[in-house]
Length: 429
Ligand code: UGA
Image 1 (cartoon, protein in one colour):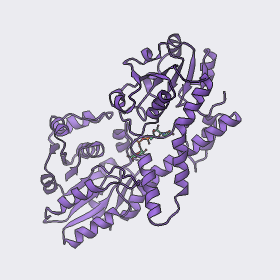
Image 2: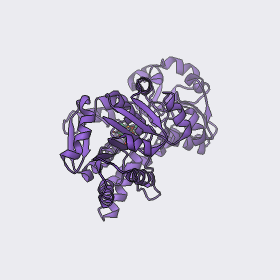
Image 3: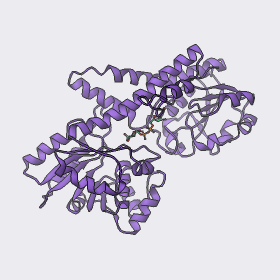
Image 4: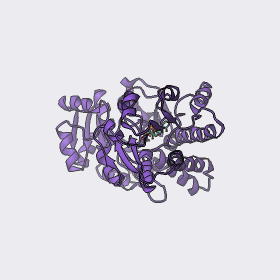
């Protein structure tokens, strides 16, 4: 099948690469000249495990080509995926300018046979319905389908091949058929529903996961107050099949470009229709509170932060990515600096991006060097390089063996046995 992908950013590039890898001919349209130049040489301008290999392989086979002309891509595609950015407006609603711009340009290219336009980006609820109305008004041959993205940064490629489900929102089976064919060889469970339900499934999934994290962070605070261990609480809860064990890791709060944005967008969507968004407001407020609560604990334990050197490991919003958008690790770095600490930070991938977002911080190329002469180690992102570091190596470099483990990555019993003062999130002291 001939497939066009509009937008070679994170979502678009992963989508283009996977669809090409499934054996389809893909033309991906990217307007940023720098990105396009890299892509046209088969190079991947973002960091995502395994993606560069898939892009290079399919580019070499000429199954994945990159162009700057949206009209050329539209003419090429029997199915056209719109994968443009929909960042948040000030009021929390998704900014749909890039989407409507791309959609309008596609509609301007007459289709001589029925074609499918697929909304892959996360869009405002009701977008597909409105887009279809505009397409019908023009008497065009385009059918609009919703096919939300559920990939996680860092594991996008394996998530795509092992997807729990593929959601297709369409007017009827005929409109969904092209997508069923594109994804056939993935062989994953597929659910077809109407377009608005599909758009809501995307928001509901992210908001539910965000709420799950805020719930366990609330339980963590209770564990600290009463002396329980949140890891055990999560384990016990997760054994109930109705609850499930995933996304119950307490820590410094959720970050990244999706959860915060999607919670805000669903709150906004609810308010537009006079639906009370209290459940989400609570999840959001718990999350905002996490970095401050964590730094309060560090300050209290160390008896103040003024002039104290703190080693901070991790700046990305989670491991296996260089993304620092809404990263709680960055919030912690800035809050430590604001309270007078000297922060020595390290991250395996995110330091270049972090420099502008955390200007008061000193960066170190080696994580162990960041620990030299520090009063405490703060672990903010659970990279494997930190997990695999011998605690004794860290201890030798610190002034005192004190660790604040914002991701509950280390084993408190072993750390304490090794002479450490260990403080996790929601773990009894
Ligand atoms: C999230 C969703 O998981 C994807 O399904 C979705 O496609 C994506 O948003 C999107 O809308 O594009 P992502 O933002 O890449 O994916 O990252 P997650 O792995 O979900 O983690 C989000 C944040 O929650 C991270 O800061 C992570 O550290 C935190 N988290 C996650 C916890 O604090 N506890 C957990 O138990 C799990």
